[in-house]
Image (cartoon, rainbow, N blue to C red; front, side):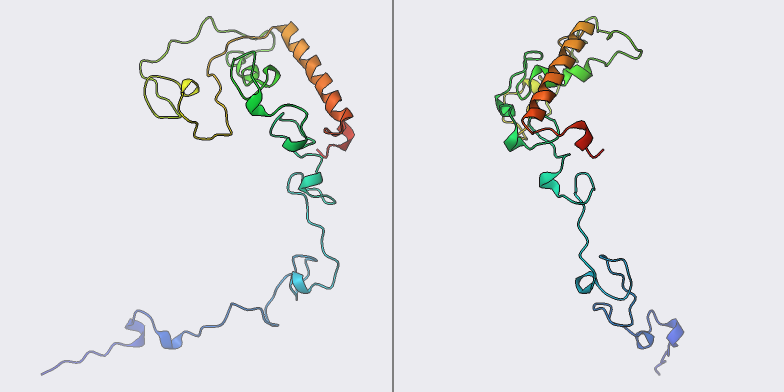
Length: 208
């Protein structure tokens, strides 16, 4: 004898007969859509009867100009706003040599050591200098080639990122008050030179 089991619709995993699939791929007149151009419902931006909205600049979020003419455009060579690499008056960064840390890729006035020298300073006043370099760990690994025995900035292998130059992890020189003032004056002269050449906007033209 055979026993037949009849499962009710409630006992089934899925009752496909009761599912009605509606198309959600295309817009229809019954759907509530909002125009991204005028923010009004009932139509898409490509069918908007109003004037096209001017897109904002991706750098400063202001309207009326785009990235190429933005006053906030940034130079990757001298790290100053107002112009691009191809317009920069300085030599290319791969030809720069720092007289402060003896590394390539930047000049002394843009050396990372300028802000890294404050690693021990916690109060206003003169910069607190370290007595000497911290003792090198017995196990040192290179971040560039992953080998043991040297730091990444000492590595002679090809760099992972060819457009980037390594920097020393140690502080070679601590500035005093006189050095800080001299560097500030040099930066002021450089800013005036770039503004005169039209490569750096005046303070009133900067959007922030």
